[in-house]
Length: 600
Image (cartoon, rainbow, N blue to C red; front, side):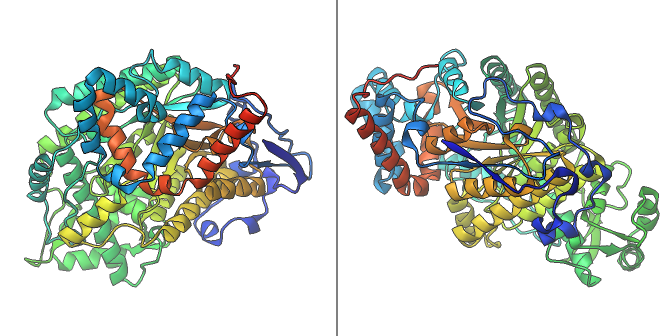
């Protein structure tokens, strides 16, 4: 249930700057477009969306604020029959036991052996599979998607057939990664180790990547045919060689950390990436002494660096975009031999070819998405692959997000550098004039990442505790919301099961004068989880999406196993959701409504 309360809201034509974070203001240059109304097409109400929307009229000095009640069990579960509620209670309770979660693979294997495949599959469909997976194929998932849509909830489709990586496969795969690393260049520490079941596609050959692409195309078509304005999730490791993604990530990290080193040498480093500056004259002098042959000053002068004669990290990264023309400039120090070496010395024609093949497959997927009215959600993966994944995603956004956001990147806010990543990409979109589009998540691989960091001996990339991750999430979210309010050229999906984060988002939207019908701030939760958040938001008119996995029962087992591991903490702390489920069941029993069936 939601309530509309009259209260002050910011007029878009003159937002109260005091409500914007001070850090945000230091890095924001408000263009004239920030004082104009956004495109009306962006504010149209989504077809099929339930709930009531508020009137968005900037001619008024005050506008209604929306408050959503997450305690009303009848409204939260009106899309569920009583058997579905009972299943949720049983599944959530079982998932709260550490032993069952930690040994889930062995238990499922034993169950399959004892019951037989047919009976085991039926049991899974009645319990865990039925709770978290929509169905076996694009036909089977349609009823659930249509039901959710009738209650205002859209879908992010994910064909969740995963290749479960064995420990032996992990060791062999990661050993090949280690051989590509160069620990003697500035800023490079090996970031590899056991994956522990994290979802990374094992590379077989280019033909296998083409098969993965075809699978994603089917998912895109299923999304376009099943829901309005849907999303399709894709994995970059399915479209190319993970070892290449690691190698490319190392190149990007070396280049970024060399810039940080240069800025610190000049005393112009800052706590935030965009605050770091390098003076071109000093840069040229420093590199000349080390034997560099390239003319950095002339290159950046031709690119039009700012009048101060300095460049920032985005300017620096532009050299990589023109790497075929800037090979002499792409050098980094090798501290072991005390000389400069080519950044791309291991980046051969074969690697360049692999990069182009990944981009070509992405091009195919984007074109199918646009034809089917679907947006692509590029999932985040392990930190040692993520720089390359984000870079390739940005390349696609720069090309296809010009008129509207088609491609969404994912930012993991449990990473210490999450804020830098978000702010740099927002600034790049502002400079180049394309739509920034993001999904913000806390992150799924915390335990594996920390174990890997300790084993290999590099700095833990994860925030030290849950509270610091929450602060990072809200900091990134606030920055993007400010960008939406100021320039109307960004969209964000708040992918969170945390009720406090959702309430924080609603509060900030009210402060900034952002409304559900603007269709710029989305909310997302996993299928089978947090319905008490998803459906009240949808009934209040907010764009809400469920992350909807599908695939054959046997082949989705690795996905279910991984989700159980990733969400163990949440499941143990889901007392409120279980309490609301009990409350609704008791209400139905007391009112004689236990046989309730959703009407849509």
